[in-house]
Length: 475
Ligand SMILES: [Zn+2]
Image (cartoon, rainbow, N blue to C red; front, top):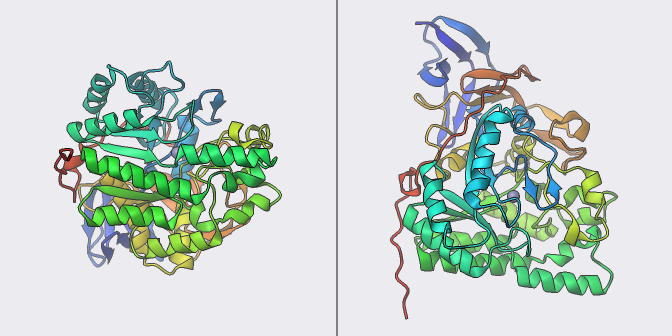
């Protein structure tokens, strides 16, 4: 037999350890891991990866593509966002079917995104989370329809009043449904009442511009909301995943819930590890306009400590392609600014730098958060591991290479990056996606519109989880 691709000489690092082997790829799948001294079989192409590290292709559990929220529209397409992701070593993204406004039904928002994945030429595999803003008497049936499409997770926001925010009744009902339908609730957790109150107080002092973003969304708003959502998850029996946790207390609350047997997961983004709230007094604070905002240096140190202890499950980009002009239109009032940062292309380098270079964690820890755990938690059975029978999604990189980040060198449909000027390691030299070499000696080799919509497994079929017993309300 002639293999499509052989990769020789690399050290393969999975989340559970490292091995030296030749990777043999056939038909988009890893077909063999051969001992390094075995005679090489025939192959269409052989890459000599001596000195490089091979890890499973990245799985970005939280990546917004073609986002439309009210009057805001991100500047990308599925073609461009997935190309940027591939350049940065991510071979699968999970995006969201968020209703564009109150008139769009959740199932229609989801089906619109499924259509756009092929119409707008995704370059890598894309899975989707559903999203519900307001419960009505059709929601339950819509969630059943989503599950039939292989969408077993639903995102809700506890903040953004008048836009994407769900009220408590909706959150409780949807989480009951997630328990019933064997799904997972994805929650953006910030306490809206606290944020509205604090932002009004800031506005009274004339401090509602971007330089005060972090003051208008204090850490206690996140900590309070996470505790509330955990209580609802415990009450309903729904597994719960917290996106972009930015405070040590929020991570600790999730870890404590997990320790008492709940299915609760903690996600972090690289910018919360590499930037602190001093950026809001910099010359371009709009480059850091995201929610939650960057936290204090002390919080960043506390977050890094939790990552080192293995309390954080996943590293996601929360990528959104807005540019500075869209941000600056509302620099004087953050209440009207589109929030979100580009990061699909830099997730690997930024996360690798924070964890492996700066904190000297084992590469295995990085692989767990970058690809293995996001694949497992999101029910993508063929992703996140370099092993026989898994998708041939691979990244090869030189652990010694360093580059200084400049937005003009990136491809994220934006004119800025929150990592501007930082020296980062962890840049992909080769990326293999579904068996195709799509980054070749550092250059993008466009595979064309081959990206597929992929479904998730139901929650209880995800390795390492058992279905939690639905709780009966007490008293
Ligand atoms: Zn997001």
